[in-house]
Amino acid sequence: MSEKKKIIVVMPAYNAAKTLEKTIRDIPEGSVDEIILVDDCSKDGTAELSRKLGLTTIEHEKNKGYGGNQKTCYREALKRGADVVIMIHPDYQYDSRTTPFLSGLISGGIADFVLGNRIRTRAEALKGGMPVWKYVANRILTMFENFFTGQNLGEWHSGLRAYSRDVLETIPWEENSDDFVFDQQFLHQAAYFGFRMGDIPVSARYFAEASSINFRRSVVYGLSSLGVMFWVLTARLGVWTHPTLRPKKPV
Image (tube, rainbow, N blue to C red; front, side, top):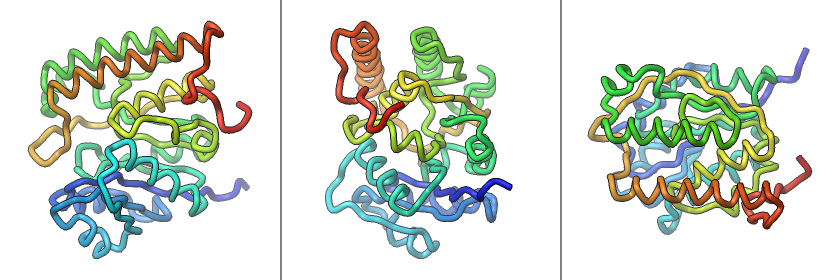
């Protein structure tokens, strides 16, 4: 019989007091061993509510950004002995009922890195509130990124993710940006190092309390994503290997 894996959910949080409890309640009972919430200087009592709900709560003394928050999340999860780490946004944008399915694919040795795919169909994504311009941009970038990496992911821009411990101990995520492009760097690093990646369908949820970057920041994010691919290309060609593409241990 295989040894039971320790599963830890991490939540990078910023002003999530209105949606945190709903997100937690949807996680199937007994499917995780611990939930760690890292509060990035919220102003709405997120940290206080997190403690009230019994979560392991860490507060940043200054705002570190979305990527910076994730770095604290993963550092703490590894320190606490996680075998599988699942990142769930506490803003209820992603369906946390899928938690055991995400972890199961990794615990069962089927995948190393699993994402939630919000675009099972165009109609479902748009009905869930995804803006048309975001849908179009997501489709175009995802198609290009799949072709570039040889992957076949349903979308490359999901914030619902599950990782094996080996992924987090190999990818030099500490070198990544503290901004939103952290997610794209991580995906390209995983593809570049040859980890087995996959996804499962999740519903799209866009509403007032769900976090979402505006059009201007989305453009910056998209251009930054192309920049990540440039560094991957230089590494592939043997021109220069960016620090984000130098594994922490042999692949």
